[in-house]
Image (cartoon, rainbow, N blue to C red):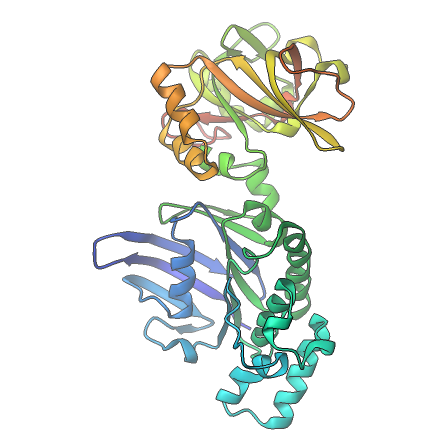
Length: 405
């Protein structure tokens, strides 16, 4: 096992495309770090440079104490798991797992010991004689993991390994991969587009955008304290609601003017975002996570000055909760950040319609208690937990926390 370090790493292709820009990332020995971001953000390119499948244009990549820029992939002592599993169809499970060890001329009894141990860990003992075509998607993925495990590498590199599995199996395999990595303690770099995977699996998550690292932090820190509007909008499902608001001061303390409505902030909001005082009289981007919104009829503990009124457009019943889509009169946030976020979730048409029509209406999503009685077309009152709000500078997109902007 070994630490992995990217220092000033840049990748520029022959056509001038810069896929990764000046990347600095230190991954500790035994740590599980997830690279996440929209398609084309450079996460897979970074992984491939670590694996030796892409050359490094500038900077250094180190595994342990060794700089590996010019080292062949086979000499880097890493094991890679791909999304297509890359199994040999003519070999059975045992031989697929053993293949890499045989190439390295490991002793036969040592190969057998390692293969059988990996099969036991992964629950493949009864499948060792089967060919890949006789396996389910989850079983094939376990075989690919087994082939990596027997190598006993310094680091595991995983590139979207669960993307070909159905939803339920992905949930199961997320837990299995996390548990396996914890048991083995091998340094792991995992690439995914799925931010739920990133949040549930990583010790730390590195969010990338246009080849640049935006924030590297433990999952909960990313969620609670996004460094900028892009990270705030990318992390979370459903995504964070965003709208333009103006910071106002008054006898009851700071409040947000949202369209014609006023939302008083709980004292905890100012404690978490003291720099907000410097924005009095100015517009900011207000971020509200769906779980911090509730049908006001069911949230009687939240005072009336911490509520918004809107029109219910759609309700999705999930059994345990209702996903409520509603519209309020408030300017939507139309920046490059929110355009990229719209592209990522496939709502670019909504973004462009808002921009073209200079819309003053924002669509919001809330996670309501399953017992809510709200109906489509109704005017509804929505309670807002203002202790958990997020605030971003309109021009820079940076989160407003301790320092002044």
